[in-house]
Length: 145
Image 1 (cartoon, rainbow, N blue to C red):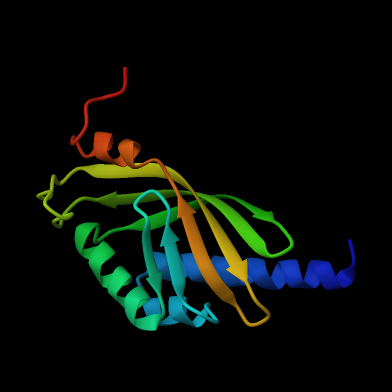
Image 2 (image 1 turned 45 degrees about the vertical axis):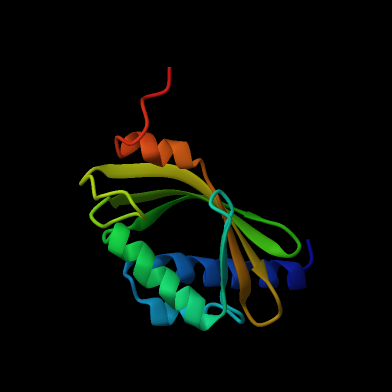
């Protein structure tokens, strides 16, 4: 692997680590600084938050539902145009989730996020997870057989 590739990977990894750490502390000004264009794609729900205003709204809305939302890194993987992250997402359901009243229950869901880059920073975080896992943990679906 060339020094240029190693340098780019190290830079991208540092940006992703800063991004995830700032999400844990809810320092969204820092999180926004890791993007060259803020964009989240939440694949299971089909929700897309594109641009600063929409991403800011996503931060506020998601933390009302899970005010203690945080992530725990499992593994980082590199590709030519992205960093792929496996992580646990944890939180306590303390706010309304659409029509669903808060359950007060905790969730822990294994997720994968693809962080796509341009030359300046992250241009998209695309997140994959199983919604049923979260709904079961919140008591909103029966346990799997």
